Length: 502
Image 1 (spheres, rainbow, N blue to C red):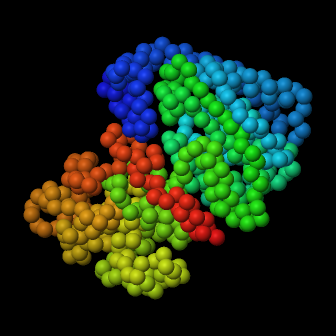
Image 2 (image 1 turned 180 degrees about the vertical axis):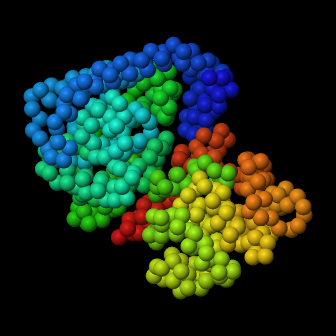
Image 3 (image 1 turned 45 degrees about the vertical axis):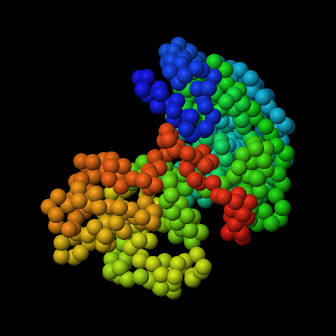
């Protein structure tokens, strides 16, 4: 690794977490030199030991999994209990070799019959697997993982709930399987779920997904901490294994038993459990979700600016239940219908009819449906910038020359970025080299292919800066996930979320 990359990495983590990782050293150069030394000395040794331990664990996991049913629970015989102990010891040695010399456990783990489901947060790194190996709880994971050599056998041993990406009904089947195990009377291993659904940098708790709370059974919240500040936010395997010592704290909180109202309303159940966990961690909560983080940090030519309103639009789309399953087909259909309207703004009733939803206060009084389709395309497929632009050109272009004007390009890009003001004159002039006053999608695409950073070079000036993800060296993060995500009034935002789901 070059020194330049090391500096970049150090600045990146300092920016995200506002901790100052280099503070124990006199300079960033000192820190990066130490990391470089550990990379060629300590890191490969630890990696080899971890690989050896996994290989050592494989035959035990294989023997314990042979002949065991994946759909019915079976009594844990004596030799399988012995294997379970051996695997826990092997995994603990592996974590010890990785620098996790002390793992502090607070609180008391509940029995499966008392709390069939464990909710664990925050989820921030590969090392959040430590509680899984210590408890041998089942987890929810993709079905493809069981086919991975060695790793797949270890995974199958803990009897996870597999999710198949190729099965359109997989989400429903997963929830049903969790409910089945949760209501089995404690015979199945506990199901451990990371309800955030994604990794964050631990500075807040984002919206919990409802999967763990749909069964309506008691859950045990578990929070995890990395006390030593130097590595507490490291998500990267290499950086963590380069540290001499890593601390890890697991705290089992009291069992949370849902009320009758919470059993009927999983969203309310999830919000209340999140409050308990956030209080134990001493961190704020935000009502932004996994999908919002995906949208804000999507890699594409048009990275969303800090002040984008598309995040609010994405929440509105979810509330209306309008995010299409068959995205490409639905967007093309919407685009064709919007083009026929030729910029005509729809009244409230007509707009509701277009969306096939009842009239409500969530809808605007009037809207150019083309702008709605563009925004929906960004929300549904944020990384496919050119596909969105192609759809936008199709809706705005004139029939005689399939081209759009500068003002129309401004509308397209302002909608795609979710901003109020945007000067596209420099970009339009650069594309319209023949000075015709119009550009086609082919010209736009050719320009983008020659200038992949066109948004930074021609659009993002002044206050409209790009959001390139959490590792932007000079960005100021409000809650550590994406800039300016945290609501100004946390309590009111949570109450609104509860009200929304009621």
